[in-house]
Length: 280
Image 1: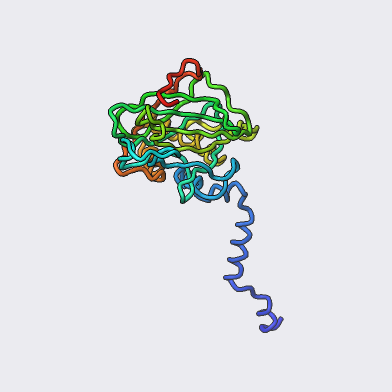
Image 2: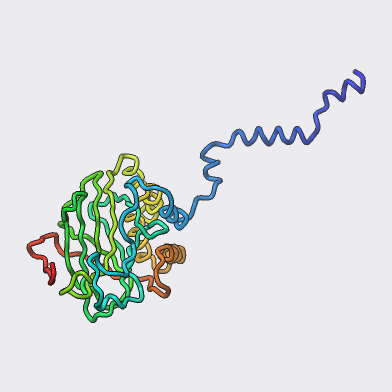
């Protein structure tokens, strides 16, 4: 064989290396490739709640309440508020809450209470069905200090119906004799069923890691409540502490808002025993 003919069959070393590398990559399994990609953090997953559309429907309601009820009072203590009442829910850039899904029969609701210019204030929480019928309502005293609160529906609350939308309204009552001066935030939620895949994921996932399941399934109420529970149970965990702090920043709360919260268990769902204030 001549030298010229021999050169026709010589493969450059760089080409051989490239072929070997390509061949070795072809044996990487999908599981290995998935493992190689870094998983998004809790905060990155939670930020996704603030973008896009929702299975529950279009955004409706008002996340921040710094004014008065629709009738509009021209005077009163609540007109002097320096900070708004805020619902801790994702919203559009215009402050309209998204219709968030929940799998809970009695979800926990979260709010920021601003400093109120009254010595003793009450609050009202109302939950209505799509037809505007009250399915739960209660008036209860607020503690005097401002900050974050959580509202847990009572154990005897009538379960939410699957695939139904519900409207919630939270009011801070500054003047029980003039309910037009209430500070109000409102929004919507949709109760969604737990399918077999989600049920299996929740059963197989340790409690400390379930927040990833909640965020993956776009369950806001479970996500925030679960993160708060982790923060309470692991006070020395710096990662959880930082995640909780960042999520509160996403809520656009006033500076220096304490990162602790006051839990409220709402009164029993028995309208005949509810205390009604003036003007109701």
